[in-house]
Image 1 (spheres, protein in one colour):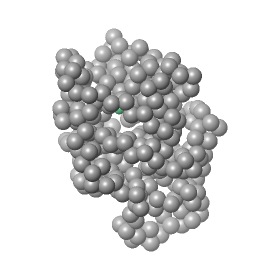
Image 2 (cartoon, protein in one colour):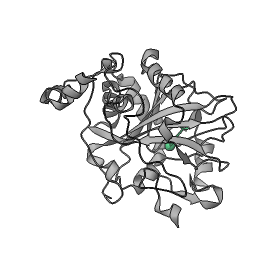
Image 3 (cartoon, protein in one colour):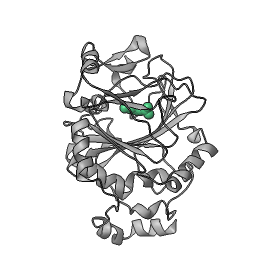
Image 4 (cartoon, helix red, strand yellow):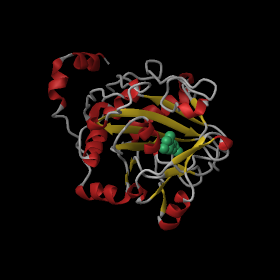
Length: 308
Ligand SMILES: O=C(O)CCC(=O)C(=O)O
Ligand SMILES: [Fe+2]
């Protein structure tokens, strides 16, 4: 680990940073497909031996050192679990969002330099009803981003399929622009697109179920409608979502948005995970403060409307 700390502390890595490039860039046709459909699936973005260390950590500490936030924006009002972080240190969870293949793909899709917005691990337990349809940009618009120049790279940590409530997306829904979302207090504070716009969009556009295996990834646009169905399996479905914003799109709202301000994103070589150049374990990792309805904190999901 000393290797990384020493490297980060020297000017050498900063000088080399611009020259670090992925050996697995997206192809022009993958980039075109993303722009047409609002998402693209990249099988095996990470190899099995790159995902295994994180899977092992999740088995050893399923509670992620108590960082789970009980988030309640799903259909039956039951909670699913999310752990979120904004700062990228030298832990495995801080290294993955900085790996060259993630950043190069994101910048190729956004068409401009990016920085880390936030990352999260979402665990949907057996019997959980999954997430209601939503666009992430509705939240990020409220956070003060002028343009929908953000995207998310979702990496499967467990198999993700229709039985266990995989991510489902509405193809081409990024072309709808931002739909007004309404917080439904009667439905567990779900933040859902207003009717009848959602119903009309679902009539016209195709729903695609992103069935993926550990290491496979989905890049999706901030305005792509997405959600998930019931987890009818006996095991939790776990996805890691890494979201990025364009540097030029830093939120104009600063109060309460310190964690979403621009910070330089130091790109790391693709080989970093296989070479084991990271601090393992969740102990050293700085998760964002846990939030709940009673203790909202100054969080990623905090909304003034929830407190009223
Ligand atoms: O993991 C999932 O099912 C999706 C999570 C999601 O869409 C979100 O947290 O905004
Ligand atoms: Fe989302």
